Length: 291
Image (cartoon, one colour):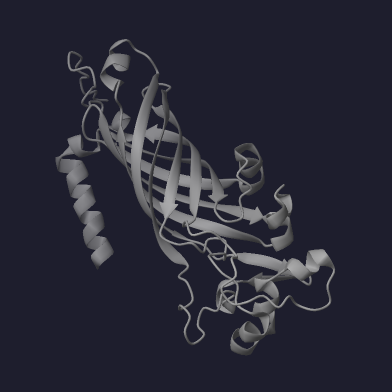
């Protein structure tokens, strides 16, 4: 009944107040999520090449002022990090890796600083800056003995053991900023290219936060597999025995993880269904058409 009521309400708004849909755009396209965290090499080109994968997005935006619009986007893709692709000795020794699918819902406020000037000169390129807030889901995994292992349930840094934190959440918050360009093709279609850096509320996108737990202590608390995947240095040293690290030895950094989200979105202007809309150029009036 709730969804029926919402559908009826939207239909009523559309029928009685067509101005509400005059600046609404919807569409979809490609996403390029890029992980940025403890398993980065700090070489920007290398990290973007190694930590980015292809995804998809669906987006809707509403322009409520000449220079301001509000957008909602759904993004789905994959990202990863791997110490083996670094050039730093301590990362090559640490030998950790992960990958995860990311599902993100993002809400953004877009500001077009030059929109009025460009549109009055019929320029089809419209730059903008944006502020975003969102929620996202990740589930870091790794490959071990030819099997795919989910890392969060293992508690590789002692999560769930007495005296340690609870296991980290897979749903988290994010916020950030970015910018892009809108290509105003014609009265029907728009291409939007944008990129944003999102700061996350978690340090566990990659399952790596701050410290190791002693192998025997972790095996007793969370099991052998947790201890093996917490410290993978013996694999690159060709050791048959685990290292006797002290609990509290550094494993990762203190900063929380981040990610970049780059989108290329092909959008359809619903305002063409109306025949009239509020123009950025206030001296120009578009008249309704009737068949």
